[in-house]
Amino acid sequence: MTRPRGFVAVWEPRAESLALIDQVNAVLDDYAAQVPLTVRQIFYRLVGAYGYEKTERAYKRLGELLNKARRARLIDMDVIRDDGFISEGGGGFAGVDDFIEMVEDWAKDMHLDRQKGQARRLVVWCEASGMVPQLGAVAGPFGIEVCSSGGFDSLTDKHRIGRLWAGRQAVTVLHLGDHDPSGVHVFSSLAEDIAEFAADYGGDVEFVRVAVTPEQARQYNLPSAPRKATDRRSFDGDETWQCEALDPRTLAAILQAAIDERFDRDLYDQGLEEERETGASAASSHLNGLLPVLALSLCLVSRIASDEGRKQPGPMTSCSQLGGACRI
Image (cartoon, rainbow, N blue to C red; front, top):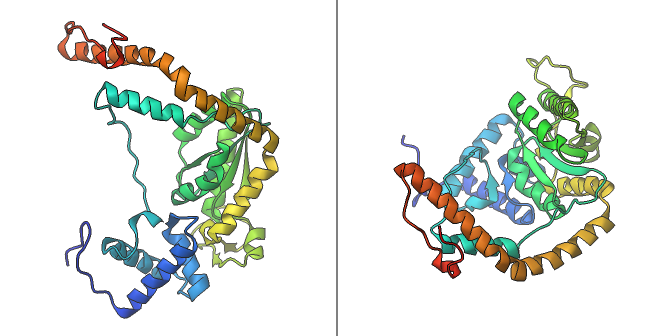
């Protein structure tokens, strides 16, 4: 049987599948403020609210059904995160006018460092990359970066991040991940390696486990699973819990509390006021003064690229769009 590609115009699911799709859409409506959700978060909401079967086999069936329902436009594409795509490069401007328009928009939306003056810079790190947008909705307004490495333990990235963060003020990483041998091992590896690399470069980095903890699992009565018999890594206890089993609103509240505990709100409010004043200024007088400089930079880059391609001097270029601000 040929697998569907793109959107499908005709799909005739069984009655029980349609009922499950209705339940999924009810979950997504209930958590509209937290979308996009991961497939596993939807799975756990179905288990708790509708008694959906809690097995890995049922989870895989749900994932397959969601794929078909999204292709059939029965579930919106943008409310579920299942991505693992990474890209780099390939950008550019249609011309000088396009470049200037981008700079003007950027100036109007300019944000200052909203963690300026805080005792320690906060970073949020989650195991499940699909949770980045919903955690960003909590951390973003405070200027707090949210990052994820999935369950991948990369020496290259740990060294790069340790060196990068060593150049900043002291850093506290709020970590959210699964409580199982794999999740605990990844957390300790990240915490110890990045902290040591940062220390070697003169920095100060600490990791704090925010979720999920055994105490939270018992408090919120999270569904558990026994540890895998084949996983022989050191681990306390016989029960495991996944971070995505937490209600998304509860997860947001846990993260918010962790931020509030470490964030000076008076400094934050002062920074917001400075940002409003600076943004208004940048969008008017300061931007006008920057345009000739930006135009000159753009022309130089274009000239270098042109000369590299021809291996000989190119023709004179005039930025008439800026009133002849530069001529090279």
